[in-house]
Amino acid sequence: MDTVWGDNVAQNIAFYLIAAIMVGAAIKVVTSKNVVHAALYLVAVLIGMAGQFILLGAEFIAATQLLVYVGAIVVLFLFGIMLTRAQVGSDPDVDTTAAQRTTGGFVAFILLVVMGYAIYGTEGLSETKLPEERVQTIAEVSDSIFSTYLVPFEAISVLLLAALIGAIVLARRD
Image (cartoon, rainbow, N blue to C red):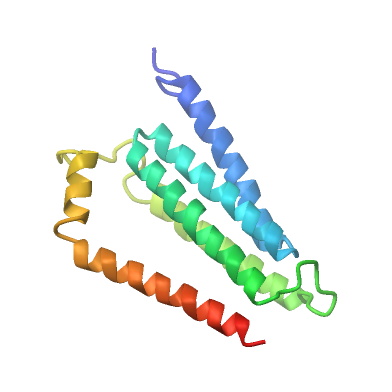
């Protein structure tokens, strides 16, 4: 029996619930005046994205999402906030004007129209066909990272370490 919700009702309910939480947290990221709270709302969005990957059956990408973005990028954001000694609370001197809010709303509307056209204006969601490609296993991905892409992987590691050491040196000058 084909319903409006599809064959797997529980998966669809979980998808829409996680998506609603992600949209709410994303709105709080850009509207929060406390920069630490904005970073924590970003954590909720990124964890929701990992949940969406799990619903799609892409557990490796979900784990990578958690490790790289939640575990590293957000920690770097918080580290940068603490090193720059940014004001934690809201700043009464910095407030958006009506023109800035109108421009932001206009840009958001244009983005909504473009995304809506991209999703529904072409062939539609139901007619989209996935390519018939072989799915790679986690072992194949790890082998390619540590054989074919070892040098770029290590270069990024050294670059991040240099950025961390540079941030500590800049913060310690005071």
